[in-house]
Amino acid sequence: MSLVGAIHTTRLVIEPVHQSIAAAGQDLQINHVLDEGILRRLATLGRITPEITDWLTRMVASSQDIGAELAVVSCSSLSPCVNEVRDRLNIPVLKVDEPMIEYAVRHADRIGLVMTNPTTEAPSQILFAEVTKRLGSRSRLFPELCPGAFAKLTGGDTEGHDTEVVEVIQSLLEEVDLIMLAQISIARVRQHLDSSSAARVLSSLDFVGDKISEIIGTPEA
Image (cartoon, one colour):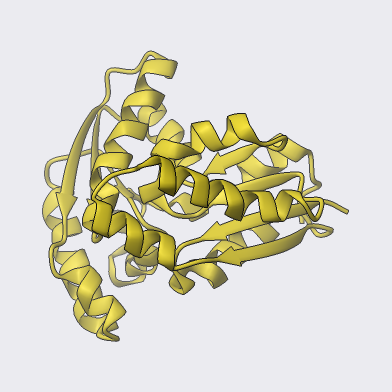
């Protein structure tokens, strides 16, 4: 039986991430690690620092220490320091958005990126650049920030959050082939889209289970 560590910076994503990881195998166990302080600290600092990298390393190491074979970092804002965290530890550490981006650049030339948290914008663009370079892709990225949506969600106004995100998605779909949702917390807005629009909107939740199966060889559920 394999153990996967799920590393979170907000409680909002725990359940959807759990379901996505669980889809990778019937016998998979999941250890959730939550520390919302690291994202608050990142917002204060405004950039990835050695302090943030050390902090994330400790979070991932706590799962490694109890036998996890792989860890998934669910926070897009922390992706720039995951490479260094990988080098420090002895298990694979997966950036939750990476499989989604790999799919997008293989299937589209003009790719939208919708986000609600400003701390996500630069890390997501860095990861996109890494993937396109590695895959030899010339895909172009069109990022769009929903400026008020994140505050609405954390304040409990889920309807207001979803309305704002949907409006941005619908507008951006007129300019791009596919849209990637930069955060797991906004994946559910697809239920408010018509089927043809929803088919062109990607969430990392769609891809993470298959990637885990590929890395640790768990049988499909």
